Image (cartoon, rainbow, N blue to C red; front, side, top):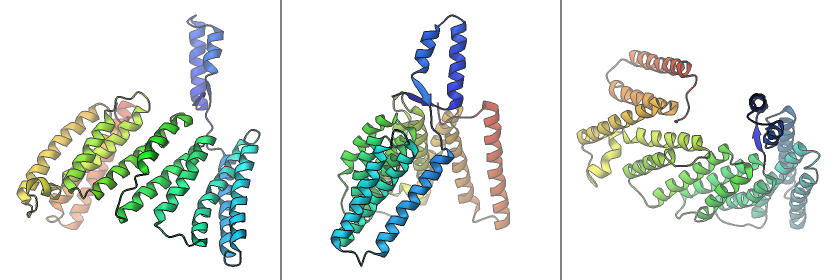
Length: 365
């Protein structure tokens, strides 16, 4: 598969290769051979947006028509309409994928929406019981191979959202969605067919974190150990020795580590390890959380020196959290809000100044 670049990136690459050709480093044949490995990335064009919106409207219209006439239709007619719309949209999408790729995508979206709606309507038609998570799992299992076969990022992302809903629904149930243990590796593996999309990888990592959080809920883990676990997961994501999509792992690792670390600066989070089963000694909790906060600030400052803007955001969040916790009960409300606003304005000014000085900061190098 050819690597996709924006038009500006491709033009820059062409100029650089032309420069190397003029220096005699590469020949014209080598330059052309290198350029054949790249193609222009298709952005959000007006036609694509219009066709996508049109597909959504058609899909909603079909569903509205079926729902409004549901009571008058027989079971055979209901099932026939659902299958006809789904199979017709998928077949038409496949047939015109060559000459009309954008229109083909729109028909693909209609098919995926119809498939999902059909699951709910058939469940209602035959009075299938069960929790709503089962329907979203079936929808995801149907959309997933479609996304991989047609190599469509939007359908793949939609599949990830369906899986997140499926996993999150189990927080209200007893048990664990063991199907996710097979789905997560499959989602990671098939991302290779979409040129290792960074956005898709971000969502798959989110599914994995959601599944881990659900497991802590099932095991009834103490909040301190949950925070510590996710702090460790954030560190692991940040330092994974991977060469591909490193920025995604570092961004997500910093986010997970920062959020978990922010919670661990709360004295109440230290109830379990300090006094299990007893009332929390607030003085001991404040001391433990303060020591952790200082260590976390030092580490985040270290990441900031490596041009990690996300780490700097969490430094400001910790400072603001201690400001609120310390002064909200002692200062007049007007002074509290004014000083808090000035503090946030100062953070914003510092961010902008740092970005100008460094020419833009990354998520952690």
